[in-house]
Length: 586
Image (cartoon, rainbow, N blue to C red; front, side, top):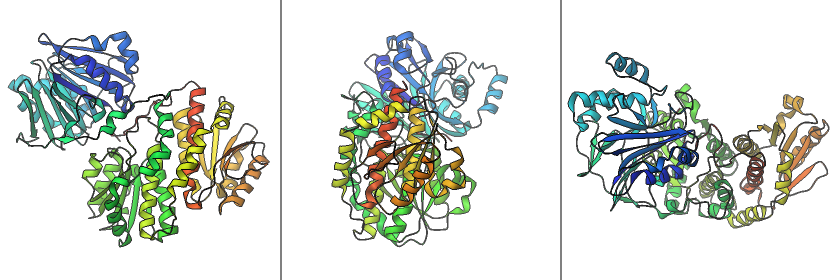
């Protein structure tokens, strides 16, 4: 979940690397560092904090040299300290590395290297790579052989970029993304296209168990057995270059505000794939759907939609739990995998478990060059553009739209998929958020919030509570309305705030009754509905849409409430503490 980048070319490397790290900061932002090769030595600067903060004090972008590597960290092994920040030099300083992933056997490798005289300064698993590369390089003085010997000993999942004291860049990939960018002025290698897309749109996607070397003679790609590999150059979409905040204060607000357009675009570039997915699901004996976090909440809504409209039973599986019940998948079933990044470690592991049973993988994903797409028989794109804010917003509603389209295809249009009306409803909520801002101020000193919904609105309650947790750090809990008297009612008192998701559909009267029961205990009620009621202390009104499409609309005021509350509490909504966008480690 860290961002890694390397550059070798004719320009000064450090400013390019710092700019790339800033654009990839959503992948991790505990600490940052840069190493460059200049005058036959590797120089490292790093520190705790975000890119701009550390650059201001450590002058990262003033390092000299036209070859370098950089990193932003999301801590896994070791505390957030200057020493644990990347890059990590080897004990001799002849090699430095940046790393994304987990080295599972780092403790035994570290002990062995220490016995051989190599020293360690950090608590990280990553430093093992630097010293192991150094050890193998000391034996052979050959970079290619050093890489193959090193990767043969590493266990886990990783992508790393190394700079050697002769100025060579090398990088290897096992279950973590790695992308090479090729420009007329040099080469880039990164965990994310965003790291270099402003300089070139020509890329090579490195496959699993491959490594690259880059020096003044150019780029070479090999598999882990040192066999040369040929790759074609791909032109990436220019939409990646548009990942700027523009007039918005934060990416999160920008991405919430893009939803009137993104729900209209969702799945438009994969219409044939939606047809194929619908046909496969329609004829499948067993169908499962998996995701993590927000994507799992989308999976829960899929369960309702498939059951009600397509008359198909579909079993949601939390991706992180699949490894503990691998027998859940019947042979030759279908697994729908939902992921924004397509690189989530838990989702990919669930896919691998399902594939061992002969199951077919259908994916709903935003990054169509991701690992998940390569593992899928059918892949459908969200087509919502880059989502930089760590808390998912537009990707969630786009996931829902793709699910709606699959179900609508199966049931021959029975949903009545009026996305234009839904788009206008969302636009109206966003353009008139003054009441949402007022309610956000009321939450400034609140410690607990409950979000209640019934039926298809319960997954939205879960997603709404997740947004509040992520952005405001308020304890938030999603509740199914019918379970109120089976425990949660004991928590309701005059200090409680409860969001009631209550559009005018078949759940309306029962949910209103629940609201009155809560109100009788003195709690403050925030109603999200297209119908006013005297039970609401605060009413966040939403436009009326067809019953099936309320989930698309009712989540938006909660996204905005979480955003404005985070700002009022002086938290950065783009970069929630302890979280990262693409969860590539377990």
